[in-house]
Length: 185
Image (cartoon, rainbow, N blue to C red; front, side, top):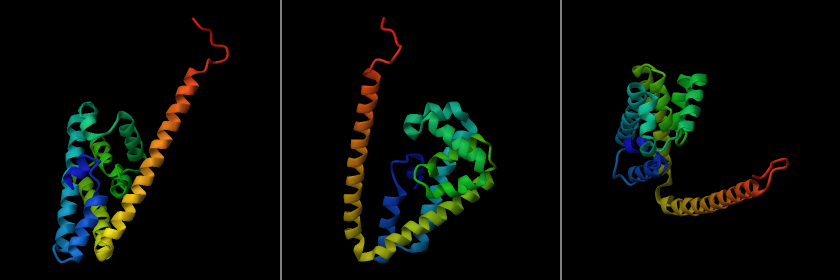
């Protein structure tokens, strides 16, 4: 869960339902999984919070490739944070990618550490409980759902690739066309 916060491509949506399945099989205990997952989420969020609070925007942008965030992502998160404050820290914990990024503007805005920690822990606890419960409820249907999600994910990936290619082609064609009134040198 620490890695999921710091490196967003590792989704809790994949890890925690599997842990919930293990709970349904008696291999793990629900409360233990929930507490460990929430503690991991909090530690990861605190690392990003500290990066923003102690290092400021220059340090965050220095490691943008590792963190997988852009200057535009930070701008957007800062706007959300400025507008919604505490609510965005709490609510972002259930939104993929936002749950990681929101820690940085909270740090940049010098949000109080205790308040940030409580909101992060509460939001993470709710999200983690939902995902673990979903995996627990699936029990023997886990493989069937995993196959369905895998198929749906493949369809979404193909649609995204086609959309990206279409937009790139449209953009290239638009740039290649001479503009009316533009002189060629």
